[in-house]
Amino acid sequence: MKKILKFVFHRMVIAALLMILQLTLLIVMILRFENYFSYFYAFSILLSIVVVVRMVGQTSDPAYKIAWIIPIMAVPVFGGFFYLMFGTGRLSRHSRKKLSAISEKMKQVLKPSDALLKTLEQQDPQAAIQARYIQQYAGAPLSQTTTVEYLPLGEVKFQRMVEELEKARHYIFMEYFIIEEGIMWNTVREILVRKAAEGVDVRLIYDDMGSIMTVPAHYARQLEKQGIHTCVFNPFIPVLNSRLNNRDHRKICVIDGHTGFTGGINLADEYINAYPKHGHWKDTAILLKGEAVWNLTVMFLSMWDYIRDNQETDYERYRPSTHLERRMPDDGIVIPFADSPLDDEAVGETVYMNLINRAKRYVYITTPYLIISDEMIEALCRAAKGGVDVRIITPHVADKWYVHAVTRAYYKTLIQAGVKIFEYTPGFIHAKSFVVDDCYGVVGTINLDYRSLYLHFECATWMYGCACLKDLKEDFLATQAVSGQVTLETCRKVRFPSRVVQSLLRVFAPLM
Image (tube, rainbow, N blue to C red; front, side):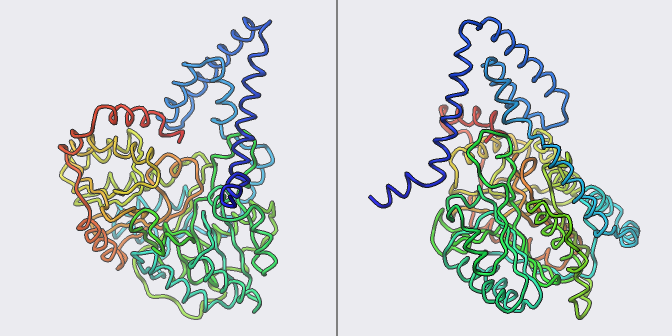
C-alpha cells in the first residue's frame, strides 16, 4: 500500500494528470464554440495552413516538419494550435537577451587557437577543416597540451572520478542529466560534502526532467544545506509548452580546472552495473587533463549563469592556468565542445557528418539510439558503398521499446548499402562514440536521435591523433565480439505487424 500511495502521489504522476486536465480543458473550450463552429473551423483551417507554410520555409530538419505536418493536416482544427504550443521552441525576449549576453561572454574567454589551427592545416588539411568548424561554430578552441584517458566502462569512470575528486583543492563543478541515490551518487556526494566543508567551491547542476523519477522535488534544497551549491535545469512545471523539450543532457565533471570528465555516464547505479537494469550496461567516458579542460569549465559556468540569471561571474578566476603546476605533454589535438538547441546550429550532427563524409578506411559507431535524418542515412550508405568499413553497434536489450523499434526500422536500408549493424547481446549499450581511420574520435553525450541532435544541450570531445584512439578502437572491436550481427535475413524475418508499427513510429520519431 505504501508503494502504491508513493506512486500515486509522485510529482510525475500528479504533473501528468494536470497536463491531461489542461489538454482536456483546451479541447472542451474549443468544442464549446458550437454556435460559431463554422467561423472557428475556418479560422482553424487557415491557421493550420499558415503554420504549415511557415514550417516548410524554416531550416529545421525535414523529418521534424513531416512529423508535424501529418497530424496538422489530419486534424486541422487542433493541429495548428498544438504546433504553436509545443512545436516552435521559441525563446522569450528575456531568455534571448540573457543567452546572447552569456554567448558573448563565452567568446571573450574562449580565445580561438588560430596558430595551432594553421599548424594543423599544414599537417592535415582535412583535419583542419573539421577543427575549424568546431572552433568557429561551437566557439571551442583547439588544445594540444592535454592528455586523454579513455574509460571503457562506467565502473572504471566511477573509480577514476572518485580518485580525482579526492584531490580537489579549489573547486568541483558537476553537471549531469540524471542523479539517483545509490552506491555511485552517495559515494560522490559524501566526497562533495566533505570537500565543501574544507572550503572547496562545490557546484552541481542536474536536469529536473532527467531526475524527476530519481530524486525528490526539493532535492536541491537538501544539497544546499550540505554545502553543495545546486542548480536545477528547466524545472518541470505541469504547463503545456514547448520548453519541456529542451533538456540539459550533458555529463561534465571539472576538478580545479586541470581535470575533466565527460561521456555518457550519469550518476546512477545502472551506469556502473551495481544492478542489472537492462542486462549489462555498457557505457564510456574520457578523462582529460590539461588545457582543454578550460572548455568544459566555461560550458559549466555558462550554464550556471543561464540558470541563475547571473552575468557577473568572473570566469577568469577559474582559468586552468591558475591551478596548473606543470604543462601537460602533447597528445594530439583535443576539442571539448558544446551543442545548444538555441543557436540554430546543429553542431553535434555536423561533427558526426564530417567524420562520416571524410572517412577513408573505416567508421566505427556506438549509439543507444539510431534515429537519424535522411541526410545521415545517405552519408552512411554512400560511405559504405564507396568501400569504407562502416559498423554500428546498438543495444540488444532496449530501455524504451518504441525507440528501439524505430532504431531497428533503419537497419534494412543501411545493411543493403553495406553498413554492418551489431546489437550488444549482453544488454544495453549507452555509449556515444565515433572512431575513424585511427585518426579521429568523438566521445560525449550526443545520441544519434532527434532529441540529442536538435533539442538537448549536449557536449562531446573531438580528438585527432590522440594515443587513446587505439584504446577506443580496441574497445569497439571487443564490444563487437560479444554482439550479434544483424543481417538482411534477420530484417526479413520481422513480422508484418511489427514492420507496420516500426514504419509508423519512424514517421513520428522526431516527436518522441
